[in-house]
Length: 442
Image 1: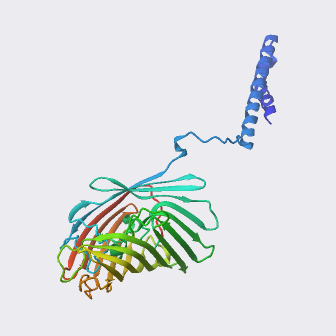
Image 2 (image 1 turned 90 degrees about the vertical axis):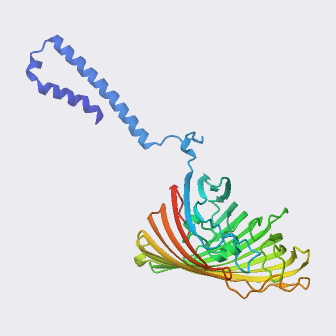
Image 3 (image 1 turned 120 degrees about the horizontal axis):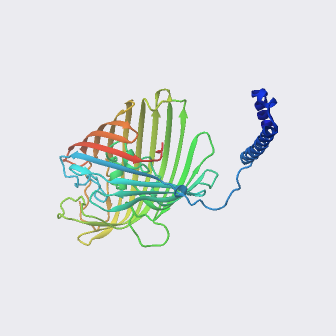
């Protein structure tokens, strides 16, 4: 078709002015012949360029094994979470929960206005085999700590996923969640006394996701055992281990659920507490414990959303139960050493209801059982008190979410976790997320 372009052009010239052609002399005929020759050459060049373009479309360019040098060849997702609170508390937040003196008892509360920890997150694919995640906690008073810093595989196949580095343990339900996605300002009491609010681990985690319609996940961890209830022991091998399993499913398009079990084991060495409960003993008593710690847990979550539209409305109900058994040797500040064994437990039940696209409200009830400590005959009676007291707390919250990146929350709590020291608490909190942020777990 391209070869006939110049013939059509020539015919058009002849038809456009026939009288001039008939009257033309030899010079004019030579000039016309030269114009036709140039037109033919021009169209031939045009035809070659068109053919080259067609070949380029049909045949892709040769592939190169060279790594791109562009700055976009490594482009991690970067995010920043900013948060702050106003806290009005009747009691000193440093007072420990009654009956759990050997626990961490870290409330994390600060009276008045305070900037909370800011969270800087970086995540990217390293190559086709690995993905890396780094989460850094920026303390308001200064200093940076590594909250998470791990690598996980992306090509093991067969439902397997390996994670190694520093990460939040997969036990329970809440533990893996970062603080900015908590449904309340603070963690349940059982997380405070048993996990120092959240259990982190330096080690490895292996998960297996079953190839079934029902969600079935089994996992295990081996780590250093650095975080409470473990201690930083200088030894080869592992200092803590975790096993967990989760199952879940959908019920129609409106309901879904997940249930799980978990087991954590570690060893504590010279774990010191300076807030020991005692009866008839001198003040300032300090105990040091060395022994084994084993914790078993159950968790359950149920979600309901009309017509499956969670953007408009949804209801979430969740609960967790943990029981810890510690057995070993206790040494008091009077240099008495003897056997020590105690079984303690705690649970919470909470519900959150999103009644409008941007508004949620929720309520939570916490309860603990400090158990009865069994002591050797070395100790004087009453060195550790058995109060027969069950710490409790009731919490209500409401929050406004203008988007998935911002949250303003008000929270009221009646804290009765310290015997004879009831505490009515008010919290006002903001959480703001900047930049890209990955999806959160179920």
